[in-house]
Amino acid sequence: MKKILYLMFFLISVVQYTTYGQKSPKTQTICIQTSAECGDCKNRIEDKLNYTKGVLFAELDLETKKATVKYKTKKLDAIAVKKIIAKVGYDADEVKAKKEDVEKLPKCCQPRGMNKQ
Image (cartoon, rainbow, N blue to C red; front, top):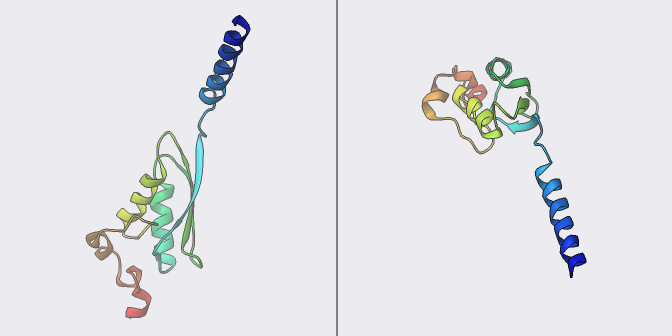
């Protein structure tokens, strides 16, 4: 009986150590689908993100309209990064930009703006 109790104690200790001993990553890299339209959009998004505390790297691929962002997990999370993009006036995955933020953008940078001119 003692051997079974010791074995159970040992197994519980191992499980707790492996579960609680794991640290979360210090940085995270995510890819976000945006509603960017042109080179000005690219510059606007990259500038805002790259000058945000906690963001280590941000780059927007205009062809795919996807932003790749590497950030410190202690400062930001994925939703916070998406909200930053939305506040600039662009949709970021499921986080939609508010109408008043979109209207602050030049006409060519608004959704389907390249076709409005």
